[in-house]
Length: 342
Image 1 (tube, helix red, strand yellow):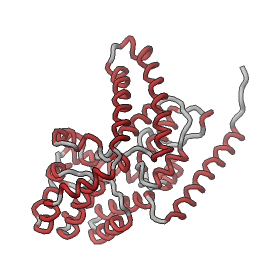
Image 2 (cartoon, rainbow, N blue to C red; image 1 turned 60 degrees about the vertical axis):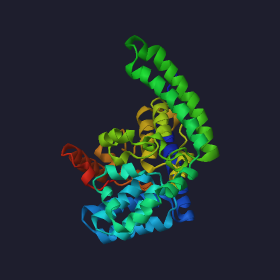
Image 3 (cartoon, helix red, strand yellow; image 1 turned 90 degrees about the vertical axis):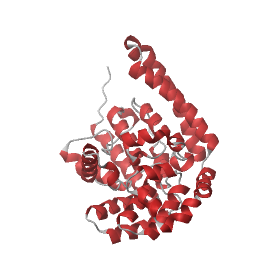
Image 4 (cartoon, one colour; image 1 turned 30 degrees about the vertical axis):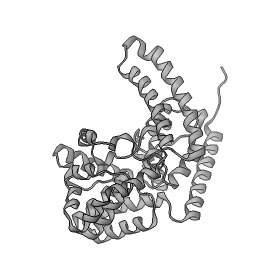
């Protein structure tokens, strides 16, 4: 058996690759000015404003988001509306309610949250509510319906094979079903990769919110998962499945899509966590972002935080704090009484 000594040369190649990757990120971010890495960093700062009740600063940051970004994720539109209501700013609440509608948030979702439903009682929002159909039509016109149907067909197949592994006949799960699942993951990745090259990453910006907001039958889902779950995650989950086995990354094109708002930073981080957890060295030196799978070695935390901050994520400590706050709200059954955190 031939043994390879990779210790020094591979480390140098890894460091060079990481340095080039970060340099490209630096150039891209500074070349295009406003971008969705800055966007996410702004929402991280808004969280800090909320937690210390610096309402004036939070509203100013929201104004900068509203002015500088045509596309705003639905979850963040709801978050902005919650903040405006919490400080009794009915004028700003009207602006963000309209933005909610234009980004695909229906009235029944607004009514389902104990904070946002207050906006429907303001005199300032009366006209906006009456214009719901026309505002919502802007959202419908902005999404690629045909592409969404294509993704939906892929996701249906993905779920069929995934269901067989999770719940199928035990003796077949890790033999026939697993091999079918792997083959399907590879086949669907080729299609998704081609779609990314042509259209960009097929997530919320391209496809909208999917079927989950089409009618109020999804209300039970949001009561179980919260409004922070808003967004299209079909391709994200298919890629998660793809990267549960060793695969070559497409980080360069994914990073470009993070910058342009086609894929949220946390999804990029989570996909890399799967690469780091399940990848093989021959495919690259994948590094943890501690979004999903985690490197819990204390000596690596500084590097992990640098990676997180480079793509717009908050620090790992802030992420843990926010998750702890969210978990307590769920435990106390108060999740609909507080502002969504990142």
